[in-house]
Image 1: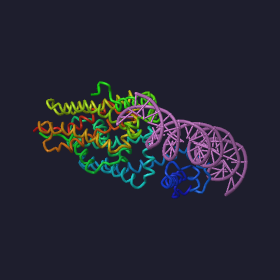
Image 2: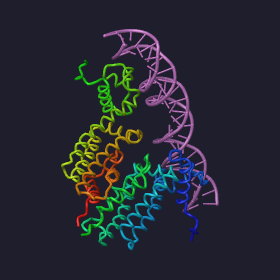
Image 3: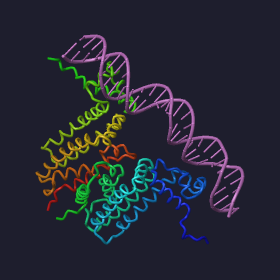
Length: 199
Length: 199
DNA sequence: ATATTAACAGAATTCATATTTTGTCATTTG
DNA sequence: CAAATGACAAAATATGAATTCTGTTAATAT
Protein backbone atom coordinates (compact mmCIF):
# COMPACT_ATOMS: atom_id res chain seq x y z
CA UNK A 1 0.00 0.00 0.00
CA UNK A 2 1.39 3.33 -1.08
CA UNK A 3 1.33 6.20 1.40
CA UNK A 4 -1.22 8.68 0.03
CA UNK A 5 -0.63 11.57 2.41
CA UNK A 6 1.78 12.84 -0.30
CA UNK A 7 -0.27 14.67 -2.94
CA UNK A 8 -0.37 12.71 -6.17
CA UNK A 9 1.89 13.65 -9.05
CA UNK A 10 -0.96 14.91 -11.28
CA UNK A 11 -2.01 17.17 -8.42
CA UNK A 12 1.53 18.41 -7.93
CA UNK A 13 1.81 19.10 -11.63
CA UNK A 14 -1.31 21.23 -11.44
CA UNK A 15 0.04 23.06 -8.40
CA UNK A 16 3.27 23.74 -10.26
CA UNK A 17 1.38 24.86 -13.36
CA UNK A 18 -0.72 27.22 -11.25
CA UNK A 19 2.42 28.70 -9.76
CA UNK A 20 4.06 29.25 -13.11
CA UNK A 21 0.84 30.69 -14.55
CA UNK A 22 0.50 33.11 -11.68
CA UNK A 23 4.08 34.29 -12.04
CA UNK A 24 4.52 34.48 -15.78
CA UNK A 25 0.97 34.60 -17.18
CA UNK A 26 -0.66 32.17 -19.59
CA UNK A 27 1.33 33.31 -22.64
CA UNK A 28 4.78 32.82 -21.14
CA UNK A 29 3.92 29.54 -19.45
CA UNK A 30 5.44 26.48 -21.07
CA UNK A 31 5.55 22.82 -20.15
CA UNK A 32 9.33 22.81 -19.72
CA UNK A 33 9.09 25.47 -17.01
CA UNK A 34 6.35 23.57 -15.23
CA UNK A 35 8.53 20.45 -15.27
CA UNK A 36 11.58 22.42 -14.19
CA UNK A 37 9.72 23.80 -11.17
CA UNK A 38 9.07 20.17 -10.19
CA UNK A 39 12.65 19.11 -10.93
CA UNK A 40 11.70 16.68 -13.68
CA UNK A 41 11.98 16.48 -17.44
CA UNK A 42 9.01 17.76 -19.38
CA UNK A 43 8.53 14.46 -21.17
CA UNK A 44 7.38 12.99 -17.90
CA UNK A 45 4.55 15.48 -17.65
CA UNK A 46 3.02 13.88 -20.73
CA UNK A 47 2.64 10.60 -18.86
CA UNK A 48 -0.02 12.34 -16.78
CA UNK A 49 -1.58 14.89 -19.14
CA UNK A 50 -2.10 14.46 -22.88
CA UNK A 51 -1.34 18.07 -23.76
CA UNK A 52 -0.51 21.49 -22.42
CA UNK A 53 -4.09 22.55 -23.03
CA UNK A 54 -5.27 19.69 -20.86
CA UNK A 55 -3.08 20.97 -18.02
CA UNK A 56 -4.42 24.49 -18.35
CA UNK A 57 -7.99 23.26 -18.51
CA UNK A 58 -7.42 21.13 -15.42
CA UNK A 59 -6.08 24.17 -13.54
CA UNK A 60 -9.15 26.14 -14.52
CA UNK A 61 -11.44 23.23 -13.74
CA UNK A 62 -9.94 22.94 -10.28
CA UNK A 63 -10.67 26.59 -9.61
CA UNK A 64 -14.25 26.14 -10.76
CA UNK A 65 -14.55 23.23 -8.32
CA UNK A 66 -13.30 25.39 -5.47
CA UNK A 67 -15.75 28.08 -6.53
CA UNK A 68 -18.61 25.58 -6.51
CA UNK A 69 -18.18 24.28 -2.97
CA UNK A 70 -19.66 27.22 -1.03
CA UNK A 71 -22.33 27.66 -3.70
CA UNK A 72 -23.35 24.04 -3.23
CA UNK A 73 -23.52 24.51 0.50
CA UNK A 74 -25.83 27.50 0.16
CA UNK A 75 -28.07 25.73 -2.35
CA UNK A 76 -28.33 22.68 -0.12
CA UNK A 77 -29.24 24.58 3.05
CA UNK A 78 -32.99 24.06 2.62
CA UNK A 79 -33.87 25.42 6.04
CA UNK A 80 -33.20 29.05 5.19
CA UNK A 81 -35.76 31.01 3.14
CA UNK A 82 -35.15 30.73 -0.59
CA UNK A 83 -34.88 34.48 -1.11
CA UNK A 84 -32.14 34.69 1.48
CA UNK A 85 -30.29 31.76 0.00
CA UNK A 86 -30.56 33.18 -3.49
CA UNK A 87 -29.07 36.45 -2.29
CA UNK A 88 -26.27 34.68 -0.44
CA UNK A 89 -25.61 32.51 -3.50
CA UNK A 90 -25.44 35.51 -5.81
CA UNK A 91 -23.19 37.47 -3.45
CA UNK A 92 -20.91 34.48 -3.07
CA UNK A 93 -20.52 33.97 -6.80
CA UNK A 94 -20.02 37.65 -7.47
CA UNK A 95 -17.50 38.03 -4.66
CA UNK A 96 -15.52 35.00 -5.80
CA UNK A 97 -15.20 36.34 -9.34
CA UNK A 98 -14.15 39.76 -8.16
CA UNK A 99 -11.66 38.36 -5.70
CA UNK A 100 -10.10 36.19 -8.40
CA UNK A 101 -9.79 39.15 -10.75
CA UNK A 102 -8.12 41.20 -8.04
CA UNK A 103 -5.82 38.54 -6.56
CA UNK A 104 -4.96 36.35 -9.55
CA UNK A 105 -5.37 38.46 -12.66
CA UNK A 106 -3.34 36.02 -14.74
CA UNK A 107 -5.53 33.09 -13.76
CA UNK A 108 -8.64 35.18 -14.27
CA UNK A 109 -7.52 35.93 -17.80
CA UNK A 110 -7.22 32.20 -18.36
CA UNK A 111 -10.73 31.81 -16.98
CA UNK A 112 -11.91 34.29 -19.59
CA UNK A 113 -10.03 32.46 -22.31
CA UNK A 114 -11.72 29.24 -21.32
CA UNK A 115 -15.18 30.78 -21.33
CA UNK A 116 -14.50 31.94 -24.86
CA UNK A 117 -12.88 28.80 -26.19
CA UNK A 118 -13.77 25.71 -24.19
CA UNK A 119 -17.47 25.46 -24.78
CA UNK A 120 -17.85 21.95 -23.43
CA UNK A 121 -16.24 22.84 -20.12
CA UNK A 122 -18.28 26.02 -19.79
CA UNK A 123 -21.48 24.22 -20.67
CA UNK A 124 -20.81 21.70 -17.92
CA UNK A 125 -20.06 24.38 -15.39
CA UNK A 126 -23.13 26.39 -16.34
CA UNK A 127 -25.24 23.26 -16.04
CA UNK A 128 -23.87 22.75 -12.54
CA UNK A 129 -24.66 26.34 -11.57
CA UNK A 130 -28.10 25.98 -13.11
CA UNK A 131 -28.77 22.88 -11.05
CA UNK A 132 -27.97 24.71 -7.84
CA UNK A 133 -30.15 27.71 -8.61
CA UNK A 134 -32.93 25.45 -9.78
CA UNK A 135 -32.89 23.77 -6.39
CA UNK A 136 -33.27 27.10 -4.60
CA UNK A 137 -36.07 28.04 -6.98
CA UNK A 138 -37.90 24.75 -6.41
CA UNK A 139 -37.67 25.19 -2.64
CA UNK A 140 -38.91 28.76 -2.89
CA UNK A 141 -41.88 27.78 -5.04
CA UNK A 142 -42.73 24.83 -2.79
CA UNK A 143 -42.59 27.07 0.29
CA UNK A 144 -44.92 29.63 -1.28
CA UNK A 145 -42.14 32.25 -1.26
CA UNK A 146 -42.00 32.38 -5.04
CA UNK A 147 -44.86 32.42 -7.54
CA UNK A 148 -46.40 28.96 -7.82
CA UNK A 149 -46.75 29.00 -11.61
CA UNK A 150 -42.97 29.37 -12.10
CA UNK A 151 -40.99 26.55 -13.63
CA UNK A 152 -37.86 26.07 -11.50
CA UNK A 153 -35.62 25.34 -14.50
CA UNK A 154 -36.86 28.39 -16.42
CA UNK A 155 -36.64 30.60 -13.36
CA UNK A 156 -33.06 29.44 -12.74
CA UNK A 157 -32.09 30.10 -16.33
CA UNK A 158 -33.70 33.55 -16.24
CA UNK A 159 -31.88 34.33 -13.01
CA UNK A 160 -28.47 33.32 -14.37
CA UNK A 161 -29.03 35.22 -17.63
CA UNK A 162 -30.37 38.26 -15.83
CA UNK A 163 -27.37 38.45 -13.52
CA UNK A 164 -24.77 37.65 -16.17
CA UNK A 165 -23.35 41.19 -15.88
CA UNK A 166 -22.00 40.19 -12.47
CA UNK A 167 -20.39 36.87 -13.21
CA UNK A 168 -19.45 36.63 -16.90
CA UNK A 169 -15.69 37.18 -16.88
CA UNK A 170 -15.73 39.63 -19.78
CA UNK A 171 -18.23 41.81 -17.96
CA UNK A 172 -16.58 41.38 -14.57
CA UNK A 173 -13.34 42.66 -16.11
CA UNK A 174 -15.07 45.52 -17.85
CA UNK A 175 -14.23 49.10 -17.03
CA UNK A 176 -15.95 50.88 -15.40
CA UNK A 177 -16.93 47.91 -13.22
CA UNK A 178 -20.43 47.35 -11.95
CA UNK A 179 -21.00 48.45 -8.36
CA UNK A 180 -22.51 46.76 -5.33
CA UNK A 181 -25.42 49.10 -5.80
CA UNK A 182 -25.91 47.85 -9.35
CA UNK A 183 -25.92 44.27 -8.12
CA UNK A 184 -28.54 45.08 -5.52
CA UNK A 185 -30.67 46.91 -8.03
CA UNK A 186 -30.76 43.96 -10.39
CA UNK A 187 -31.12 41.37 -7.66
CA UNK A 188 -34.00 43.19 -6.01
CA UNK A 189 -35.80 43.59 -9.31
CA UNK A 190 -35.41 39.92 -10.19
CA UNK A 191 -36.38 38.84 -6.69
CA UNK A 192 -39.53 40.96 -6.87
CA UNK A 193 -40.31 39.16 -10.11
CA UNK A 194 -39.96 35.78 -8.42
CA UNK A 195 -41.98 36.60 -5.34
CA UNK A 196 -45.51 35.46 -4.79
CA UNK A 197 -48.02 38.29 -4.84
CA UNK A 198 -50.16 38.17 -1.72
CA UNK A 199 -53.83 39.09 -2.03
CA UNK B 1 -25.65 79.42 -51.63
CA UNK B 2 -24.26 75.95 -52.18
CA UNK B 3 -26.63 73.23 -53.33
CA UNK B 4 -26.95 70.86 -50.38
CA UNK B 5 -28.88 68.05 -52.03
CA UNK B 6 -25.44 66.50 -52.64
CA UNK B 7 -24.33 64.69 -49.47
CA UNK B 8 -21.47 66.52 -47.78
CA UNK B 9 -17.91 65.33 -48.19
CA UNK B 10 -17.54 64.16 -44.58
CA UNK B 11 -20.69 62.09 -45.06
CA UNK B 12 -19.40 60.65 -48.31
CA UNK B 13 -16.11 59.79 -46.63
CA UNK B 14 -18.02 57.87 -43.97
CA UNK B 15 -20.07 56.10 -46.63
CA UNK B 16 -16.88 55.12 -48.42
CA UNK B 17 -15.27 54.00 -45.15
CA UNK B 18 -18.31 51.88 -44.36
CA UNK B 19 -18.10 50.25 -47.76
CA UNK B 20 -14.41 49.45 -47.42
CA UNK B 21 -14.93 48.19 -43.87
CA UNK B 22 -17.72 45.92 -44.97
CA UNK B 23 -15.68 44.47 -47.81
CA UNK B 24 -12.25 44.12 -46.25
CA UNK B 25 -12.86 44.17 -42.48
CA UNK B 26 -11.47 46.60 -39.92
CA UNK B 27 -7.92 45.21 -40.03
CA UNK B 28 -7.41 45.51 -43.78
CA UNK B 29 -9.09 48.90 -44.04
CA UNK B 30 -6.70 51.78 -44.65
CA UNK B 31 -7.15 55.44 -45.35
CA UNK B 32 -5.60 55.21 -48.82
CA UNK B 33 -8.27 52.73 -49.90
CA UNK B 34 -11.04 54.88 -48.52
CA UNK B 35 -9.67 57.83 -50.49
CA UNK B 36 -9.20 55.70 -53.60
CA UNK B 37 -12.83 54.59 -53.49
CA UNK B 38 -13.74 58.31 -53.58
CA UNK B 39 -11.23 59.08 -56.30
CA UNK B 40 -9.15 61.43 -54.18
CA UNK B 41 -5.78 61.41 -52.51
CA UNK B 42 -5.69 60.24 -48.90
CA UNK B 43 -4.15 63.48 -47.69
CA UNK B 44 -7.43 65.19 -48.43
CA UNK B 45 -9.29 62.93 -46.03
CA UNK B 46 -7.29 64.50 -43.21
CA UNK B 47 -8.84 67.89 -43.92
CA UNK B 48 -12.13 66.42 -42.66
CA UNK B 49 -11.10 63.90 -40.03
CA UNK B 50 -8.12 64.21 -37.68
CA UNK B 51 -7.25 60.50 -37.75
CA UNK B 52 -8.22 57.09 -39.01
CA UNK B 53 -9.59 56.26 -35.59
CA UNK B 54 -11.87 59.28 -35.80
CA UNK B 55 -13.27 57.98 -39.07
CA UNK B 56 -13.92 54.54 -37.63
CA UNK B 57 -15.54 56.01 -34.54
CA UNK B 58 -17.73 58.21 -36.69
CA UNK B 59 -18.87 55.19 -38.70
CA UNK B 60 -19.74 53.37 -35.50
CA UNK B 61 -21.40 56.47 -34.07
CA UNK B 62 -23.55 56.78 -37.14
CA UNK B 63 -24.73 53.21 -36.74
CA UNK B 64 -25.59 53.84 -33.11
CA UNK B 65 -27.64 56.85 -34.23
CA UNK B 66 -29.56 54.73 -36.71
CA UNK B 67 -30.11 52.17 -33.97
CA UNK B 68 -31.43 54.84 -31.63
CA UNK B 69 -34.16 56.21 -33.90
CA UNK B 70 -36.78 53.47 -33.55
CA UNK B 71 -35.91 53.12 -29.86
CA UNK B 72 -36.61 56.81 -29.37
CA UNK B 73 -39.92 56.48 -31.17
CA UNK B 74 -41.01 53.64 -28.91
CA UNK B 75 -39.93 55.45 -25.76
CA UNK B 76 -41.76 58.61 -26.81
CA UNK B 77 -45.05 56.90 -27.63
CA UNK B 78 -46.59 57.64 -24.22
CA UNK B 79 -50.07 56.47 -25.20
CA UNK B 80 -49.21 52.77 -25.21
CA UNK B 81 -48.93 50.92 -21.90
CA UNK B 82 -45.43 51.01 -20.48
CA UNK B 83 -45.08 47.23 -20.29
CA UNK B 84 -45.89 46.95 -23.97
CA UNK B 85 -43.45 49.69 -24.88
CA UNK B 86 -40.71 48.15 -22.77
CA UNK B 87 -41.20 44.83 -24.55
CA UNK B 88 -41.18 46.49 -27.96
CA UNK B 89 -38.10 48.50 -27.01
CA UNK B 90 -36.25 45.41 -25.83
CA UNK B 91 -37.21 43.39 -28.91
CA UNK B 92 -36.16 46.24 -31.16
CA UNK B 93 -32.73 46.59 -29.56
CA UNK B 94 -32.14 42.87 -29.50
CA UNK B 95 -33.28 42.42 -33.09
CA UNK B 96 -31.06 45.28 -34.29
CA UNK B 97 -27.96 43.79 -32.69
CA UNK B 98 -28.64 40.34 -34.05
CA UNK B 99 -29.36 41.68 -37.52
CA UNK B 100 -26.11 43.62 -37.51
CA UNK B 101 -24.14 40.58 -36.44
CA UNK B 102 -25.72 38.52 -39.21
CA UNK B 103 -25.64 41.08 -42.02
CA UNK B 104 -22.49 43.10 -41.28
CA UNK B 105 -20.20 40.90 -39.23
CA UNK B 106 -17.20 43.15 -39.97
CA UNK B 107 -18.99 46.25 -38.71
CA UNK B 108 -20.30 44.33 -35.73
CA UNK B 109 -16.75 43.38 -34.82
CA UNK B 110 -15.89 47.06 -34.92
CA UNK B 111 -18.83 47.72 -32.65
CA UNK B 112 -17.38 45.25 -30.21
CA UNK B 113 -13.96 46.83 -30.46
CA UNK B 114 -15.47 50.20 -29.65
CA UNK B 115 -17.36 48.90 -26.64
CA UNK B 116 -14.06 47.57 -25.34
CA UNK B 117 -11.87 50.55 -26.15
CA UNK B 118 -13.85 53.77 -26.54
CA UNK B 119 -15.26 54.22 -23.09
CA UNK B 120 -16.39 57.79 -23.59
CA UNK B 121 -18.43 56.91 -26.66
CA UNK B 122 -19.97 53.89 -24.97
CA UNK B 123 -20.77 55.86 -21.84
CA UNK B 124 -22.61 58.42 -23.95
CA UNK B 125 -24.55 55.79 -25.81
CA UNK B 126 -25.46 53.96 -22.62
CA UNK B 127 -26.62 57.23 -21.10
CA UNK B 128 -28.86 57.78 -24.11
CA UNK B 129 -30.34 54.29 -23.82
CA UNK B 130 -30.79 54.82 -20.10
CA UNK B 131 -32.68 58.03 -20.73
CA UNK B 132 -35.13 56.27 -23.01
CA UNK B 133 -35.80 53.39 -20.65
CA UNK B 134 -36.10 55.79 -17.76
CA UNK B 135 -38.86 57.58 -19.61
CA UNK B 136 -40.80 54.35 -20.11
CA UNK B 137 -40.30 53.52 -16.44
CA UNK B 138 -41.52 56.94 -15.29
CA UNK B 139 -44.63 56.63 -17.44
CA UNK B 140 -45.30 53.14 -16.14
CA UNK B 141 -44.95 54.23 -12.54
CA UNK B 142 -47.11 57.30 -13.08
CA UNK B 143 -49.80 55.18 -14.72
CA UNK B 144 -49.84 52.72 -11.84
CA UNK B 145 -48.62 49.93 -14.11
CA UNK B 146 -45.32 49.64 -12.24
CA UNK B 147 -44.67 49.68 -8.50
CA UNK B 148 -45.02 53.24 -7.18
CA UNK B 149 -41.97 53.07 -4.91
CA UNK B 150 -39.63 52.44 -7.84
CA UNK B 151 -37.10 55.07 -8.84
CA UNK B 152 -37.25 55.43 -12.64
CA UNK B 153 -33.49 55.90 -12.99
CA UNK B 154 -32.69 52.86 -10.82
CA UNK B 155 -35.32 50.77 -12.54
CA UNK B 156 -33.91 51.72 -15.94
CA UNK B 157 -30.38 50.84 -14.87
CA UNK B 158 -31.52 47.52 -13.41
CA UNK B 159 -33.38 46.75 -16.63
CA UNK B 160 -30.39 47.47 -18.84
CA UNK B 161 -28.02 45.50 -16.61
CA UNK B 162 -30.45 42.62 -16.30
CA UNK B 163 -30.87 42.30 -20.06
CA UNK B 164 -27.21 42.84 -20.90
CA UNK B 165 -26.94 39.25 -22.14
CA UNK B 166 -29.07 40.27 -25.12
CA UNK B 167 -27.40 43.45 -26.21
CA UNK B 168 -23.75 43.49 -25.10
CA UNK B 169 -21.85 42.70 -28.29
CA UNK B 170 -19.56 40.16 -26.65
CA UNK B 171 -22.54 38.21 -25.39
CA UNK B 172 -24.55 38.65 -28.58
CA UNK B 173 -21.64 37.11 -30.50
CA UNK B 174 -21.24 34.31 -28.01
CA UNK B 175 -21.73 30.71 -29.00
CA UNK B 176 -24.14 29.12 -28.34
CA UNK B 177 -26.30 32.21 -28.76
CA UNK B 178 -29.18 33.05 -26.45
CA UNK B 179 -32.60 32.12 -27.81
CA UNK B 180 -35.85 34.02 -28.17
CA UNK B 181 -37.12 31.85 -25.38
CA UNK B 182 -34.27 33.01 -23.14
CA UNK B 183 -35.09 36.61 -23.92
CA UNK B 184 -38.72 36.07 -23.01
CA UNK B 185 -37.81 34.30 -19.80
CA UNK B 186 -35.66 37.17 -18.61
CA UNK B 187 -38.00 39.86 -19.83
CA UNK B 188 -41.03 38.29 -18.17
CA UNK B 189 -39.18 37.89 -14.90
CA UNK B 190 -37.99 41.49 -14.90
CA UNK B 191 -41.41 42.77 -15.94
CA UNK B 192 -43.01 40.84 -13.10
CA UNK B 193 -40.57 42.58 -10.80
CA UNK B 194 -41.59 45.99 -12.10
CA UNK B 195 -45.32 45.41 -11.96
CA UNK B 196 -47.54 46.78 -9.28
CA UNK B 197 -48.99 44.09 -7.05
CA UNK B 198 -52.76 44.38 -6.93
CA UNK B 199 -54.53 43.60 -3.68
C1' DA C 1 -8.44 81.89 -51.25
C1' DT C 2 -9.75 77.05 -50.96
C1' DA C 3 -9.54 72.51 -52.19
C1' DT C 4 -6.57 69.06 -53.47
C1' DT C 5 -2.35 66.85 -54.27
C1' DA C 6 2.18 64.56 -54.02
C1' DA C 7 6.20 63.80 -51.57
C1' DC C 8 7.84 62.59 -47.20
C1' DA C 9 9.18 60.94 -42.21
C1' DG C 10 8.01 58.17 -38.62
C1' DA C 11 4.89 54.47 -36.99
C1' DA C 12 2.90 50.26 -37.72
C1' DT C 13 2.58 46.01 -40.09
C1' DT C 14 4.07 42.10 -42.89
C1' DC C 15 7.05 38.46 -44.08
C1' DA C 16 10.84 35.36 -44.15
C1' DT C 17 13.83 33.21 -41.04
C1' DA C 18 15.80 31.86 -36.53
C1' DT C 19 14.51 30.15 -32.19
C1' DT C 20 11.64 28.06 -28.89
C1' DT C 21 8.14 24.87 -27.58
C1' DT C 22 5.24 20.86 -27.94
C1' DG C 23 4.49 16.25 -28.03
C1' DT C 24 6.65 11.38 -29.10
C1' DC C 25 9.38 7.56 -28.20
C1' DA C 26 13.34 4.62 -27.83
C1' DT C 27 16.39 4.23 -24.11
C1' DT C 28 17.83 4.47 -19.23
C1' DT C 29 17.28 4.19 -14.30
C1' DG C 30 15.91 2.38 -9.81
C1' DC D 1 8.55 -3.19 -14.95
C1' DA D 2 7.15 1.30 -13.66
C1' DA D 3 8.96 5.85 -13.75
C1' DA D 4 11.59 8.99 -15.83
C1' DT D 5 14.79 10.81 -19.25
C1' DG D 6 16.76 13.07 -23.35
C1' DA D 7 17.02 13.28 -28.14
C1' DC D 8 14.10 14.36 -31.80
C1' DA D 9 10.46 16.11 -35.59
C1' DA D 10 6.79 19.14 -36.24
C1' DA D 11 4.30 23.11 -34.70
C1' DA D 12 4.31 27.48 -32.75
C1' DT D 13 6.41 31.71 -31.73
C1' DA D 14 9.90 35.39 -31.60
C1' DT D 15 12.94 38.38 -34.24
C1' DG D 16 14.31 41.83 -37.32
C1' DA D 17 14.60 43.54 -42.06
C1' DA D 18 11.55 45.11 -45.68
C1' DT D 19 7.32 47.00 -46.75
C1' DT D 20 3.10 49.51 -46.11
C1' DC D 21 0.41 52.92 -43.79
C1' DT D 22 -0.52 57.19 -41.23
C1' DG D 23 -0.46 61.78 -40.67
C1' DT D 24 2.05 66.37 -42.13
C1' DT D 25 3.23 69.87 -45.17
C1' DA D 26 4.93 72.45 -48.96
C1' DA D 27 3.51 72.80 -53.59
C1' DT D 28 -0.26 72.89 -57.20
C1' DA D 29 -4.56 73.57 -59.20
C1' DT D 30 -9.24 75.85 -59.50
